[in-house]
Length: 77
Length: 438
Image: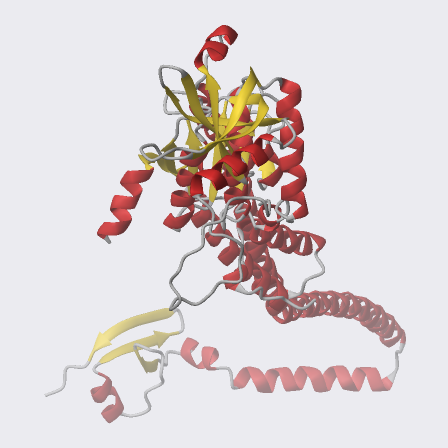
């Protein structure tokens, strides 16, 4: 089985999760050899880190601000 | 203009002659224009009231929609008799016809639609107007652009257009909490209860979209009559929404209401809570739990891939020594069996030899005659000869055997001196002695 390397710039949370589940199905099948297993595990870990980062970004606590406050912040940059 | 109208010709021969009719006196022309306009068919118009003003005798207002506007006026007595609370933003139906005030040397002329009937637009009127606008937007292909925009599954920044103290605001927050979403929420409060809120809503949407950080926008308002929600059917607002680069999720009115913004938005939801859940389609809490489980499974697979294989290799690497041990143990066993077998065989042989010797002895004893007597005598003689050489017999005659303490025989005085400590062995025993020699 060839290990696909999806384009990281086009990655979305859903596509990453779908790929992780695909990897786990392949590993669960027991058909992967050592080299493929290690490659898949490495790819899966990288995707999990990406997904964890995405979740972390929307788990830090709700921040509420008005539109004019956001505009002021953006203009101050 | 009729050819019979009065004509005043100038006498300035230097000016270039025009081929157009006239010139006519303006008052005459204005009067003819008024007559012409009044001859137009009287009709009903529908639109939104704007700029209401009152004079002593007349009521003035503009009737507007997205495509145009017309100045209207009505006699004050007729208007007061209707009892209609005319206000800006109100959708009305008026009946009347065109009129033109020709003015004079001191007052300005003006065109207006002379209203003789006026009523607030009913639901049927609004629905008819809504349908006309819907057809125009659809014909311009404006229902599709928003629906083609990609929507993020985990937006980090969400814009919300709603009333500042509205229940819709609370509902949006409740929907986001239900998702476990805790990102950045940008409120663009707008007077959504106002029937003339469309420009303010459109401006808020444009500003949110221009920020660049907003990934999705929710437009939320609670329920109301179609007239109350008609701001969300504003054609200019809907054209703005359709062309935004940020996906808009609408939740206006109850689930039975269908405003025009619902048609052009990326997604139309029945409640603000639902709109929030559509804006964040992933349950963040559940997703985190599932991701943790996936991470554990990956870790386990990686662990098994290495550890199990390492154990197999270790087992294989131990196999040669184990094989040698097995062979060594087998060899020892065979050796023990061989020795035991040999002993048994020797015992059997000894037994057999003993038996044979005894048989021979018996045979020998039976063998009598001169040979046996001679042999016996030879044997006795040899015994006596051997006895003569027995050192014990010499010692018994009074001699002593000198040895050192280790039992080595000393055959000379020098050897005895050198040994120092001696042992003298007599026929009946031994004594130790020390050499005392000067």
